[in-house]
Length: 132
Image 1 (cartoon, one colour):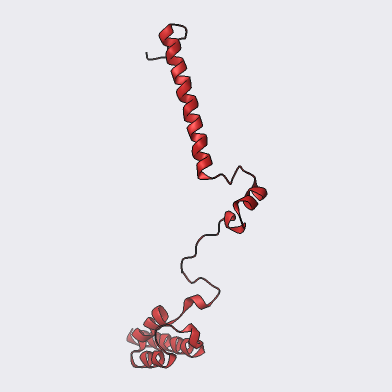
Image 2 (tube, rainbow, N blue to C red):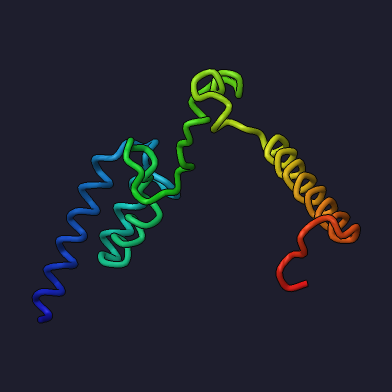
């Protein structure tokens, strides 16, 4: 079992050293490359893990490697809201103010219907609603 752990430590050290040596100076964070090599040689397992966690600049590649990227919304592809409306129509690209105004108009409509129904019931013209 201990041979397996030593072997895993050596493999991790070799991978870390190869990665440090093949990286450019602009892809190394925290310390210079020479310092990372010394850390990995003198403290092999911990140094290698710290290199991959802290020293390795994952953002230099095109791949994400677990870093958060803001989601790409279809509205972001257009220069302005007018371009988005031209492409998709008003059905999907309504502003919050427009949606709130539509909801307020709907509330006013149903309140007016309720007032009318109560007035008819009070005058005895309409049919009473169930439960009254």
